Image (cartoon, rainbow, N blue to C red; front, side, top):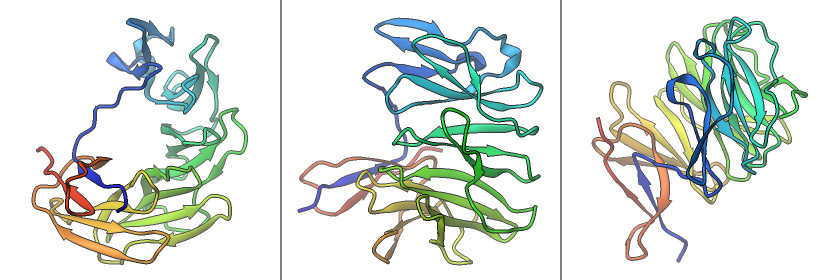
Length: 249
């Protein structure tokens, strides 16, 4: 029997090596009982949106120190922040890949927010999607596959959201949702075989499971699914492949 998983609506995450967080818009690190402030800039910088490297040795964050938001990298062992982006418009919401080789972030460089990739040393900056699209179309909700080789994201169009999948090695893109699906917020299962999506135009009342590798979709009516979806191990006595738990308001 394959390993079972439960989808929960909330997550409290604690890392074994420490916890990075941003009270009052400044990055801090909690380690062995001590709280260490990892930037020395003032609160007006809005240094926030921290993402921790997989090896726990650095963080990436967005700061408005240059007058608009840009993405920086900071080693937790000491040193000064290194600016990674120079796009001239707000760049923010960085998320480190599970492999540690790339950081995805949003930028307003093209008008509507779009997703970009950059290496942790600031090289290799590029758009995630190579497809041409109107300036009114935005991109958000990037979700790394567990192996860091694929990236799912949501394309926001005037007619509704569309979920796309990018193979980073080949640059190939594939749409995972129909035109009228209104499905968004992709969340990978820990084994990388299934994506969970919320579905609903006004409130999230359905849960959709998509298998990106093996073509297949399962739509489940689960009243009250709200907030972020998170996969966690399920009890072995669970008789089904997946259990769902209602989210909060």
